[in-house]
Length: 320
Image (tube, rainbow, N blue to C red):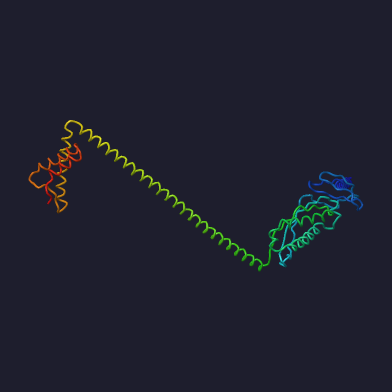
């Protein structure tokens, strides 16, 4: 009895395993019934007929990266390039992916390689390094159109590496070095040119500032000299006015006569020291005559020019 129960339990387990199917998330299972496509099981719990329905294909609906093998491509200017890339695709129709191609992964790989050779063959060597985006878009467009019949969506293609021959690499390196040296020389010449421009501008500005300074200094000196002349003239005018006012006071004329006599005597003393020729009165011992003569001149100036001249001739002695 226990053996029969064990057999029944085993049969139930097998039937349950054949009947109940649990599909993981982002997966799709294709079910065939009597060898024909029947249904696509979506994620979750599904019931199928045991021994009649079978899961023929299991697909992953996630984005799948596919490494495209490296290959040699020839550019438009007959240069060989070693190119490898990576392809990203996603299964969008599990039924077409099951029956559209015997191996859609291989088909995508081969098609990407042939498309890449065709695209690079239309470009020159320099353009292949500059137009990576164009190459990637061209490969994706060609693959996406063909892979629609396989239930696959090609999302993007990326070139991982472009490797030219060693001779081309050395030539490119030499070209890059020459170009950098050229740019360095141009930059240095531009720097020297700008330096000369700056120096010339600085010298011009300095000359302008110096001339402005000299001009302002001349103006200041002229204004100072004019102010000094005006001040001296004003001082002389004030002195003369004060002298005139003092003369008009009592005893003022006597003070003027005394001052003139002193200046007269002082002038003769300076003449004796400065030169060999000396002009003196006839009577050298009569010093009072000098004072009297000076006072007479002052009085004569008050009486008029003619009286002063006559008095001077009367007191003047013979010259020696």
